Image (tube, helix red, strand yellow):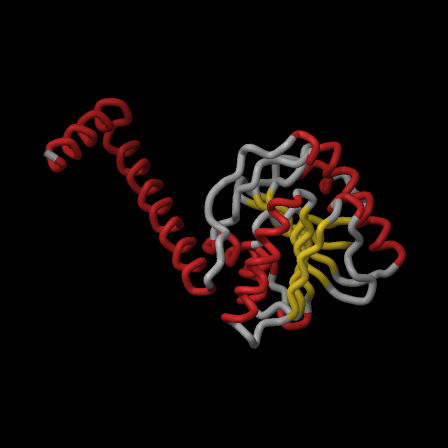
Length: 225
């Protein structure tokens, strides 16, 4: 029965998408399944809970729904940014349950900071941080901060990667960028923006403080001038 159902689905897809479309669809599904397995393995390895989307976010928190970056995509972005992780601090603006923070710590960033406004997600991220540090004692410092990411300034005396996974609408992103611009003017350091799902990349594109390193459908990278 299962085999017949699979054959039926393939036949239906061939009718709707053709051979090339069906092959592309199958490749995307296979990649998604692989990503899910990697996400679950990451959580199991460290005894943490970063999986699952949260679309029931209270309107008061003003941000977009929680969706964690996949390990595959995160590592690809950091490779493309070409930063020496051991000399950089990592900041996640709207960290949710903290997955990007822990992926950064795993990659060897000297310090990893997550900023989260939603108290429920903050508590999950805080518990995850405790579990992660127990499982990986050699990792750099991890800080989970309860607060408004739009007014959070990167450390004045540290080079940093500033990570976003489409956390806000355009107005809040513009406010966040203005805060970062002020920090860059007052304390010039090397700061690289890694922006997953860059819906509001135009905010960085029109900023006089940032130079584009990469821009595609999946992510954007910018460097402070």
